[in-house]
Length: 283
Image (cartoon, rainbow, N blue to C red):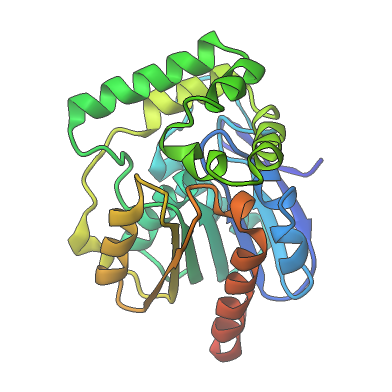
C-alpha cells in the first residue's frame, strides 16, 4: 500500500486515473473507502488523477507518539504535504465533513494551492455546536461511544437512534443497503483512535466568517436538506466565499456520497470540467 511519511505520521493514500489532480479527504469515522465504495472516485478517475487520503486517526494512516496532530491545522498541512510528495503544484480538493473543516481553515489563510474546493456537508467551524460546554459534552459522549461499543453495536444502535449524521440514511427506502456501506467503511478504522481524534479535533465553534472572503478559488458547496448540523454553515459559507456555488440535495442527509452517489459525482464532474476548462497548468 502507498504511504508517505510526515514527521511522526505514516499517511496512507491511493491513486487512480490521470489528468488534473484531485485529492479527496473524508469525514469522521470514514476513510478513503467512503469515496471508493460509493463509486465516486472510480468515476472521477475516468477524467482526473484522483488521490484519496486517510486522515490521521482513520483507516490505514498511523501516528506514532505525540503530538498526534488530531487538529484542523495539522490535517490541512498533511494534505499539502501529500500534494508536495506527489509533485502537485495546484490541485482540486474534494472533502466531506471533517475533511472540509481542515480544508476551509487552510483556504482562509492561503488558497493558492487549490484549483478548486468541493465542500460536502461541512463548515468553517471545527465544532458544529456553538456553545462550547455543550460541544465538549457532545463530543465526549461520542468519543466514549467509540471506546465502549463495537462497530457492530454502534451500527445496530443507529437503526433506532440515527442522530444527526445518519437520519438521512435511516429515513430512506434503501436504509439497510446504505447503512451496510457506511458500516463497511467505518469498520476499517480503529475505534480508539477515532475516539482520541474526536476529543482533540472538535474544539472551535467560531466560523470565522470574515476569513471566508479570503478564499480565492472556485468553491462548490453541497449539503443535504436532512443534514441538520450543516445546513446553516453551508449557506453561510456560500454567502461569504466570493466564487462559490451552493447546492441542496432534497431528501438527503449528511452522507451524500452514500445517499446520492450518482448525483454527487455528476455535480462534481460538471464543476471540475468548468474549473479545468479555464484553469492554468497543473503540476
